Image (tube, rainbow, N blue to C red; front, side, top):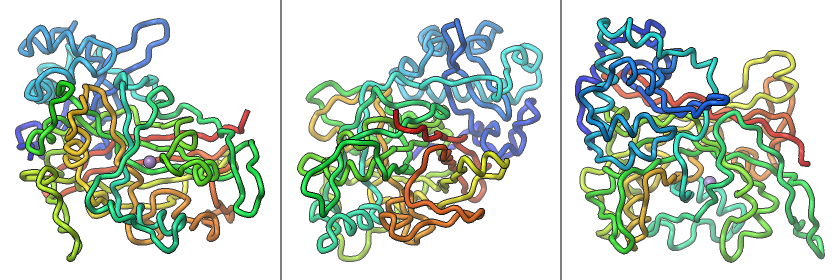
Length: 432
Ligand code: MN
């Protein structure tokens, strides 16, 4: 497990006044993002309260002298790959240097010019994402979805032995707020003789956490369970948009393809594994009768995270009236997951697959045992058979054009200052 240091001290506060008791970005968080600057190269920033600190400007103002030239060069890059390829103890040094400067009033005059209101900036992807893999690590999700596609055989016999995943597509990953166009695809109704091609009629979201990897293992050199935790640079929110009608026709025998590769949205902020250290909790025990993981998947001092996630929806009508978004579901990460973050990394690297800085893993849809904790509409409305009724009387089976999906997450644990992930949002555009 990561250890605690002065950057996690609940008593530490910032001279950036809006950071005090901030719901997402108090000084105990300090997540990274990449700013898009029109006509300029953009660059890395850190969230503090309602502001972002431009790291290149902070370095120009004299911050970061103790970090060493390679780290300062990595922080002056436009994305996080260079920093994530440095040793993990340097990630922590950066965090400590940021925490020290943003809590020490002696730095206020020099760093204030490097602060910008978060609402005035736009974001780009925080990493250049070489490879993206999506897992299926929530037992409730696997059971619920399995029951819909295979009522007589919901959970396949490999589920409790192998962390199931599929290779996703990096090119269509977008950052929060980028609109998502309803895909067209091939669909076949169960009673139809032949498929048709057209706009998906069952567009869905999937509530997930993303893991960004750091460090490297050479091709052919497995990642061991003991090393896996140190390979996780940080976490984001992830929406694995899914066209269920396309998926149900195409998914056998090789798994998801065009039903999922048209868009994946991630939150702009990367909450570091170090920032989440106070929220590490022991994984819940496996249900009695379940097999122990094979030895290669037994992670020493394994951890999961005390994070609560929620999905909200704002329809076009609601937004037109200025109504607040309505909550569709809320779920606890630690108890929803069957496999831990380190087990996902261990399994993916167990065959010698080379994992690189900026690789992204999705956890799979995070669903709990109750209807209001299910992380996608497929489960929430039981494949559309039990429509969800919004506060204004509208109903949803799947997403409609103009719907805005909003995902949020907060880490909470006794004795720690809560931290958040910021919003992961996207609005659905009509098919072209
Ligand atoms: Mn997924």
